[in-house]
Image 1: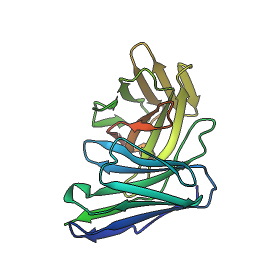
Image 2: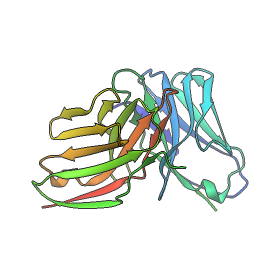
Image 3: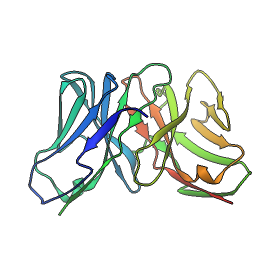
Image 4: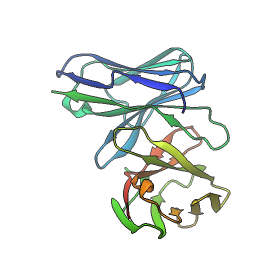
Length: 113
Length: 111
């Protein structure tokens, strides 16, 4: 199994509060991704990183920011959480070679009340 | 707008028979396609992939077929086993290294 962890695994927060989710990898993979999974939408890309300090937006990036100061850590921040950001968040890593497969973390269930 | 679609939310198959999961896409610039399997409360796990320059890739009981003219791919599982019961997502990669996922098909293999 790829060494990828997410913290926290569960979080309940109130509307308007800031929230940071952490993804940590021990595989030294170059690419890291944040997705959200919602019923009827599958997984949707929020942001991704192709190296330290190199990030780009995905298809649902509004309301989210990311940072990657070290190869192993990719942080997702909700500056002011809204109820529409209640979701399950998955981090993924990839080397982008061969089959382009991604390895996913166990997910973080976030509830915004 | 959903660029990758899985129009069947669920599928039930008898153990030992073939499972066929379908996926359609709209963007002809996708260059790689992948299938993932997901159990409840876990992250998706990679199953099999195919390059856009091929039309078939096989790995054990799993085969993926790609029909570029129809913008359609399918995953065949033969023979199906109860442990295959999970949600299956298809995904497509664009040249910008972004991945687009379908909404998933929940497969139930009946013993």
